[in-house]
Image (cartoon, rainbow, N blue to C red):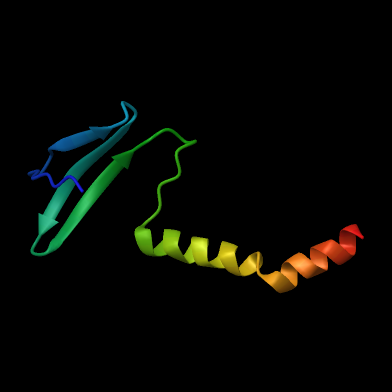
Length: 72
């Protein structure tokens, strides 16, 4: 993991097309602005983990059995 220090209004660039800017710092909370192309998905980690868990659940063995029956 790369750890960087940034102050308000400072930014970092990832892969030449994603820019993350520190917009505000209040106590222990940091507000970030993210500029990325539309085709680059950006999620809060807790939402991303929830999506991954839902996808895994959707592909459980019962779902695979139903798909096998459907395809015959």
